[in-house]
Length: 124
Image 1 (cartoon, one colour):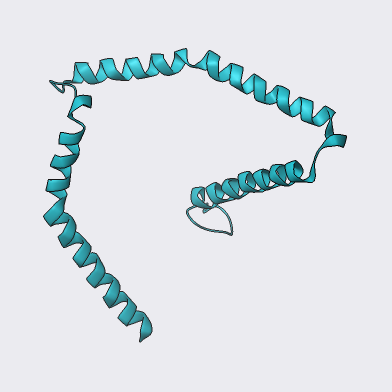
Image 2 (spheres, helix red, strand yellow):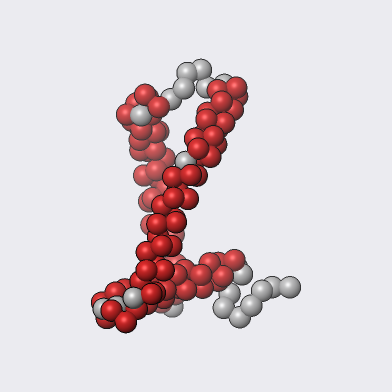
């Protein structure tokens, strides 16, 4: 019985949210476009979109050397820390451990999502 009442509450909330979006959505859309009109390309043609996508691609491509340099600095820092691991403070080791655990947790979350939100394995 409790599940049926929760379902009814959820349906009521969904209906209320849908009505709110239907009422206020167009106004929000117009305000958003008005506030960001300086970013809008006029006329919005396929050619303009193609040009913008090429600009974005080559801008990102041009930023690779700077990102590679920053990556090399990070690698050098890790190598330095590994050489001097005897002087490593517990605080830094704890932070590194927590970072590793966070990376593992995100990996596990991605695997679960990739399997279709199952814990047991892939559907074959």
